[in-house]
Length: 197
Image 1 (cartoon, rainbow, N blue to C red):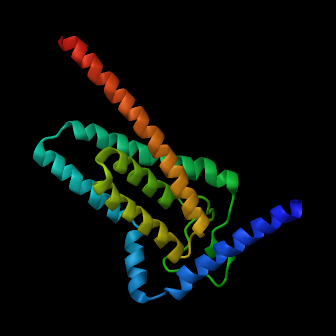
Image 2 (cartoon, one colour):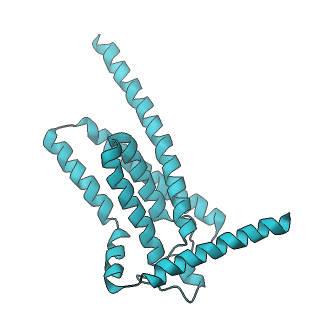
Image 3 (cartoon, rainbow, N blue to C red):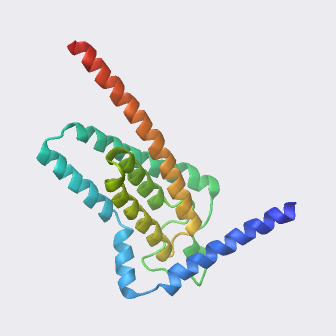
């Protein structure tokens, strides 16, 4: 039974490597290098948040600023949790540090790999946004999340499983955070209603 478990782990690791090499090597192109460098930066998220910030200010929907601040705190918590707790505990080394066949596009910053912080942050943002703004706006954020995760594998700095792990961690944090936010917002609205009654 132990042997079967080990063979399953080996199989999953081999699958991880195969997918990594397909994305990192077979899709290699100078235009893709530029594209996925951009997707791997903070630019998509700042653009999305900046657009909504300006829209909120234009429409004077000041209550949305509270939600934006909570969203920012959620992403910050996901980033810290993944980087400071999970990464040191797992201790997995980045593929660009171990595999000579990995094509490194934009440097190999840091040494720890699991989970992908970019993916955890992207999922925290996208899932919170989905729960807050609904499926139409959420689909755009989820698309950004997917491309950010894909870019990390393409750039050679993460295994696919690092990205999936980041997605899972960020999503769970976003769901919990949104539930807390809604409970707090309901409590605050109830108190205001009682005071004005």
